[in-house]
Amino acid sequence: MMKLYSLAQELARDLVFEVDGEVVTLSIKGVLIASVPSKSYNFSFFEVSEDEFILALQASGYIVYLGIESDEEVTEEAYPSIVQILVSELMPYVNALIREAEKVGYKGSDLLLDDNMSPTLKEALYDILLKHRKGRTPYEQFEVA
Image (cartoon, rainbow, N blue to C red; front, side, top):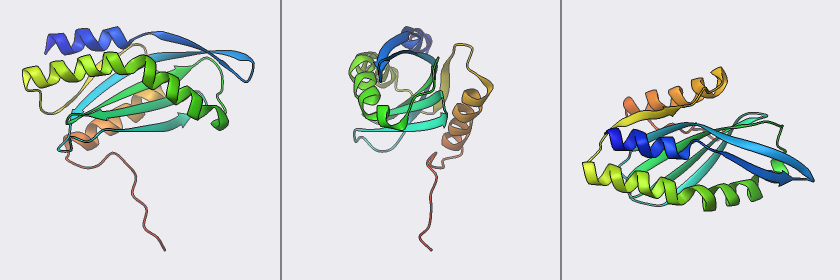
């Protein structure tokens, strides 16, 4: 289990982007891992606030949630390019984390990294953690009226 925490620490980094001619720094502040029954590959990007996001990467029976804080507000138009770069930069580290989780037979969900997350981002990640621990989906479900 200690190896999982160590690998999560490797994700704590600052990534510098140019968005609409402005330099923006995105900082990985939180890492949560959860085992899930699905072995499919997927990703989701959640906006927590104007400058806080969660990138969820699913692979091989695990979802790794990355809590990300930006030093500047990021427009929705920039999301596709930012997500593409984040996935390409961070996937090797996420894959290493998932391989180690498989190796140790990790089941469950846990917050592996809290690198001074803002209260808003921390609340969002803990909400996801609690939903996983209760066996509920962390995604909001809406019914068509």
